[in-house]
Amino acid sequence: MQFCPDCGSLMHAQGDVMVCSSCGREVEKDQETAEQYVSTEEQTHDDVIESDPAAADEGKPTAEVRCEECGNDRAWYTIKQTGSADEPPTRFFKCTECGHRWRGYS
Image (cartoon, rainbow, N blue to C red):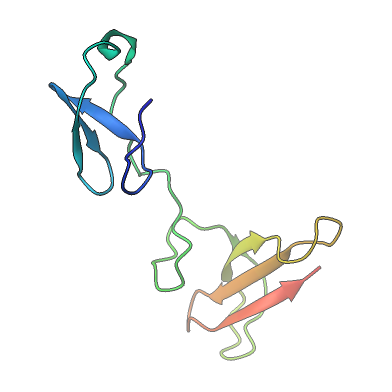
């Protein structure tokens, strides 16, 4: 494996150069160690669940919880460990109807 000297992302082989998957920087392969490189298929991002608040929520799990804003009984949720390891995780909800957001503590 080779990592980009600029951004630290994984680089992949493309002919006689190594190309960064993120920023596109190209670096010549070191010919002495070129035999040690193993090429794999390009990584797909179809199994990545977006956690950006502005992102679409398709694919996230849903739960039966009541939205205080519109009364809908379904919401998408994500779970994150916001406290120390011995505390329960926090569930972040987003209503499937109106988009209202709130937290749930166990």
